[in-house]
Image (cartoon, rainbow, N blue to C red; front, top):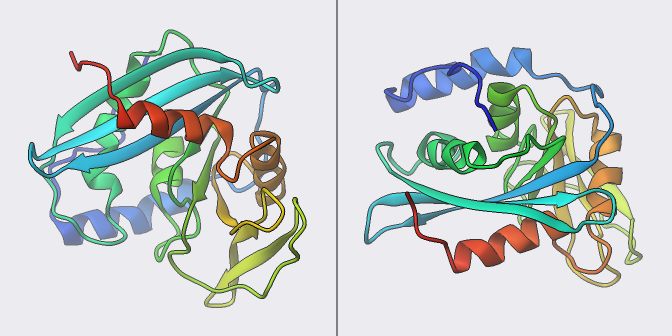
Length: 225
């Protein structure tokens, strides 16, 4: 896929990066602006401390039948320190490089991380969605900020995650009796749609299929170029 013009430089101090998040969050679209969804990508990110490299794996599936279509990996040197709430500045260059290797532009991207459910309301899913101007959803395994009441054990049950008086996401049960995942909108997707689409992408396992396959690819990365 062809990437748009860069949204900003990566040569930022931590204070500049946090300020940039505050500025960019005002451009995040919290309502649906979706075309027909025929493809969905899952992106998994990680860090190789021995090599000092950020790694990204992306898998593109058809939707709604979730058949594999494409896959790509990339790694890039890490130039930004490890700071909670600013991980996108370490990992997103690798994510963009992996996405650029896809032949098809996804209609929707699921990110292994948070979107609006972030201290400054601008997590990885928001950042990536705004950079690409594509619909994105954050699906995280753990809560970052906020809290939620107990939720029912049945598949599809969800409760809002709230922080400082705002609803920032949802704790969603994708399988009966398993721990919830934490869903938040990234860009161009409402929270209600994000919950429904995440469920459609998780027919069998706790982790939605695009992210589950991306995680497996990340564990056995292909040679980088």
